[in-house]
Image (cartoon, rainbow, N blue to C red; front, side, top):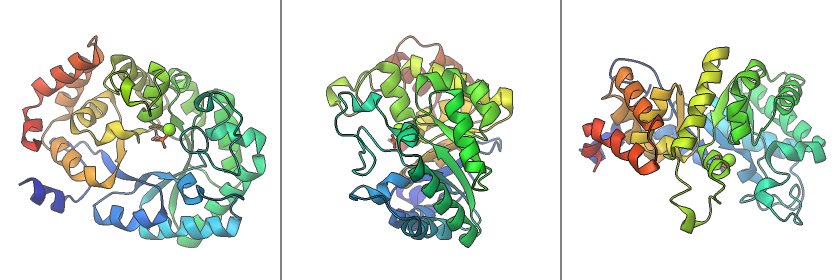
Length: 318
Ligand code: PEP
Ligand code: MG
């Protein structure tokens, strides 16, 4: 039954009572776009553009970028593609953008912060996105990584607008951005929560260190509370909040995220079918109930256990 379900997922994602939840794909290399579309993704919720240029010594030209981005836009014609501007640094250094003399790269000049040092790279990238989107008539949403403040949001939104890119959002992956979601979303069109980094920075636990797995856990109630704060900011401003970290691919956590108010979930394409199947069997009110239980748990283990006990449908996934 499981294999059959995996083959037959077709959007749109929804709860049993018809509340829509967009189910989107995370991709890196443009070659991943076609398989993501075949897996049933309603769009791309996170195109990690830095993956196109990881092995480069020199920055890509505008033309090279246009070619790469068009490959994704054409595959998802008529559907939303959220492209993230270069997220260089820490676990994903780009030779042409990342300083190699920082003592704490995870806390260094990474993500949108690199635009202060190399503004021309952001300008080139936005120009390439605009050209590629125009050529493919794409529905493009542009998003900045590692945003921490309101002024960073303002300058990113203004930079996008200068290229005619009107849908400009931010990733929420730093606790400060979650706490400032209201004012940030008064400026940005949308937010997408990166639970991998949000967990790392909330718990002060390196996401690459297996020995800290107990801390690097998006079920940690402190992380869930920051996700709830982000959703509250989105609701206050009438702006959509999605999740594009690994948490979105966990069916139990997906139910919690929907209950907290998240309206899209972006994940590795192979997870789409299971997440869709579980959501289709729960009502929104149940999502909200389990979300409150998880939010008020005192430990990650308690949060997991209480949610699992209320969702027998999860047992069918094995
Ligand atoms: C995240 O931090 O959750 C995220 C989606 O971005 P990345 O994993 O690329 O850092
Ligand atoms: Mg991240």
